[in-house]
Image 1 (cartoon, helix red, strand yellow):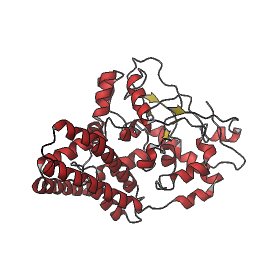
Image 2: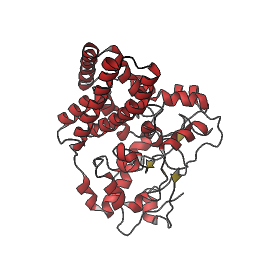
Image 3: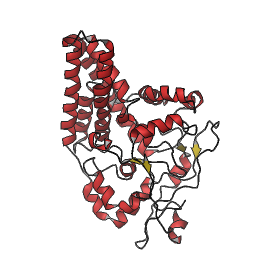
Image 4: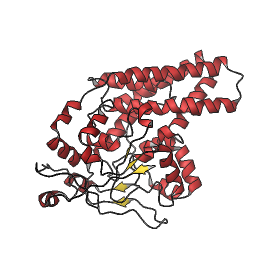
Length: 370
């Protein structure tokens, strides 16, 4: 299910004058109470992560020691890629008599589970958290992308970094659903189920809707995947390639390992726009659920992000958090108050004006203001 801790006290007056969200202020904005509304939730302030980072560093400067890289991620990524390539070989070249229903089941339970892990590793590489050198991080992304049929790693890197830079900014955050998604899907349970199944497709469509010219590494990614797919068909079979494609479709859609796409920023409570997940899925998926912590400190790799959570526990305990990815999906589909429109947005002016220098008085302690 989910949890919410509480904190007592209120922020000091000086902090309120500087920024009413210091450092765990929950915004005054409310979720819509009428299920027929088809628009985003609006806020007049910038996102909270930059200021919470400053507040945490002021109280816990040792957090900087957690910054760095984790080469183990590349080893895990290479092993995961090999698992799917071996599975594709057996399904396409050895177990050719398997009924299609069995192949689909394998694609979901094995292929989907491993493919969801690819996204986590590509995410780490996108933040240059695997190696010190950006080139090696890009290479890691390509290697992990090799069993995914479609080019993902370099475009994800580009658009995800823009999401961090412009979180919730209308027209600039590529993670926000399109207006067409809101009007077509809204709060219809059947359409939301289909939407979750096809989330991987919608992610690509959102990037295309921004009409940006492909960058050099995106072109390299495309050519690389065309070559890999050609080799798979040539030395394995078209059936092998189809298995890999279906695996990615499952792993980025109706799968517990993909629930973090909904968990991270879809609004489940008034005033809070980013959510963490503290469940057992973090063990296999490299702590991808710790999303508030990640947005506060994108310089920290997955092997050390829990240390941040333990060091700065007073900053994170008061925040609402999920403990079940399955519940996230079920609640999102079943609730008439949740849908693609359940995201917080802000104007670019509000985003930039809020990113001024902010210092936290040393005597202050974090508290939630509802």
